[in-house]
Length: 455
Image (cartoon, rainbow, N blue to C red):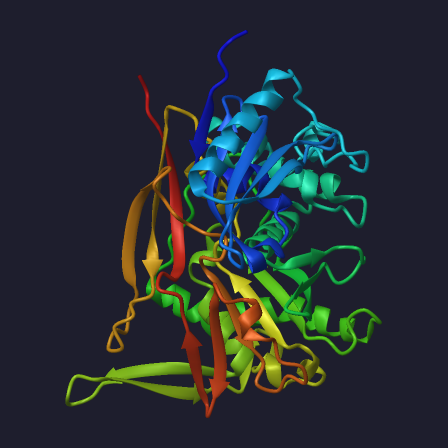
């Protein structure tokens, strides 16, 4: 028999393979210390310390018949770390030595297969084709493949939608699903609407996903071209009226559905989670328009005689484009008090999946991934963001939470408990000003470049 090798793996690698198998309850009583796998990663192991008794426990996981990593061997009350580590390594070797690759548990449905086309090629979304075929997107493919056994397809059409007209909206749902799991929330997808019920600390929040989609005159293209970089004047002009109206349309449509009247939503905070896919690279610059539209103010700034930054809020009133006119201040519209908050990210794209997959070790050897963007400058006197740039590899530490913002409704009947979402940015409207609480690293927008090295 060949020698069986057990290797230590990173938490990022473990999370990509089996993070969705982790129950949030585990963090209440234990802390993970190390992660292990055999050579082909068919069996994984976790070393934990009991944070109540301060002894050690180990968990051995293998894929069930549905493709999910699940625990099938557990030992607890081990007195010291060294003994626990050796027990775990020996257990992995013993199970591998039996030649077993699948560990049935008798209650697993088969996970979704997103990458086998189920419609004719001409109906496939161009971006799905890129994701399915291009070697540069291997990290994203592998990451999503390991995610899908845990994702519940409530409507029964997720695969068809992901491959065709609903690619952007379904990708946004997967990004939300990944973030909620990373945040340690219990995720319930038993209901057709809204998309998610999340729970922690005995508090439940209902969340419906929505996107700003493309217009028919601007379809996605199979042959990608570099997006046109808008000038600062063009951005300011579109942020003033075009983008608030563009955001307002899907938000208003969701408002009219009155999800808060559903029996399982009634009496619980309700959140709309929105992402902008209306044009190539639009996420890079459109978020300011969303903030302005939600609160009905924009902010000017200047430096006083002491060179101190002064921010001045300016009420907006209305947004007008051609014959279309809407009131500014979504949170101040009729029935909007039932919307507890708006959740937003400017990075809920396939590049996010690709970066997180790459830092988990999924890679194509001849592809170098580089991320360039802007992030918040925590200097209280700074009026513009900072630039950042790095090569994406196993040393990178991007999280799903990076770039997420929650805009709280000042008129909400049922406010969202901030402690349920501690890893993201939170924004409040107080005395005419937006007050923000931001993580140490908060990216506003970024581009990801995949460079193929020719040998």
